[in-house]
Amino acid sequence: MEFQFGVDRWYHWMAAPLGLGPERALIRISPTQLHVKLGWAFEADIPLTSIADIRRGERVIDGWGARGRQGIWVVNGSADDIVEVAIDPPVQAPRPGVASNCACYESACFDPIGSSSHYARDGSR
Image (cartoon, rainbow, N blue to C red; front, side, top):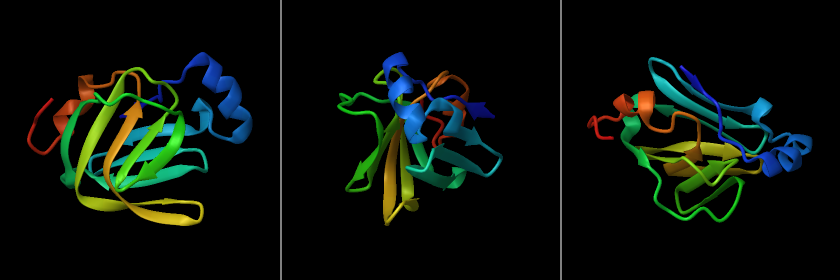
């Protein structure tokens, strides 16, 4: 199952020339893992067994693109429809020149909770 990143119109025109537009962004759920990619800036494979919770993001989004700190990664092209994925145990989230643990991942996507929520370990929404 694949989902498109939600992308604000103004961000698309800025991100596409940098290799971060929606045509290079992917959220894919396979039978064993969640694969997230945003161009060259972020890529992570998260085993479904490591997904502890999936919920609507409540944090105020203050940027666009891919950024992470202290195990929390925000990968988005929009401030709307943010999905938060709690990961336990953390996984490696490599990006150019950096390899860090990803314990929480947040992203804007279409169908933000709908069909993806049943992948949480505890079945929460």
